[in-house]
Every structure is written in structure tokens, then in C-alpha cells.
Image (cartoon, rainbow, N blue to C red):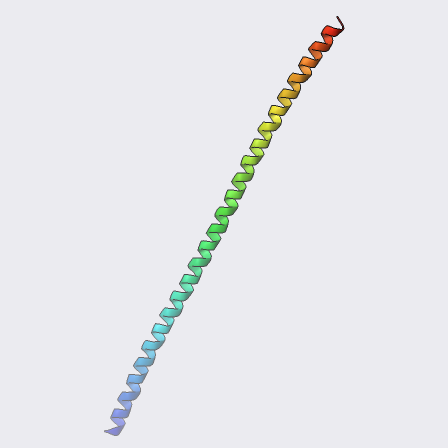
Amino acid sequence: MWHRAHQEVIEQKGRQTDVLRKKQREFRTGIIKQIHEKQEKRINERRAKYQEGVKLEELAKARRQRLDEAKMGKLNELRFIFYVLRSFQYH
């Protein structure tokens, strides 16, 4: 009788230990999942900021190119005007 009761207590503690281990694994798995999700979110945010920076750099480069083209156009226009005015001075 005592042996049977002792055996039941041991089995019950074993089941409780199994349940506790299962809960601990689930908790650990949940925490690891949260960590991975946050890391992935940070990676995606950094990637988005990088892409935004690249886009802004491309826009700035295109703007500088348009300004350079406008400056060259004005310089050529002024050169032409200067050339025309000089040619009238000599005639």
C-alpha cells in the first residue's frame, strides 16, 4: 500500500515536472520569437532608412546635374552675347 502511494506521488511529480518543463520551453520559445521579431523590425527599419538615404542622394545628384546644366546654358548664352558684342565693336 505504502509503495503504491509513493509510486503515485512520484508519477504525479513527474507529470508536474513535465508540464513545468513544457511551459518553460513555450515561454523561452515565445521570448526568442519576440527577440527575432524585434531584430527583424530593426533590420527592416535600417534598410528603409538606407533606401531613403540612397533616394535622397539620387535626387540631390539629379538636382546638381540640372543646376550645372542651367549654369552651362547661361555661360554659353553669355559667351555668345559677349562674342556678338565684340564683333560689333570691331566693325
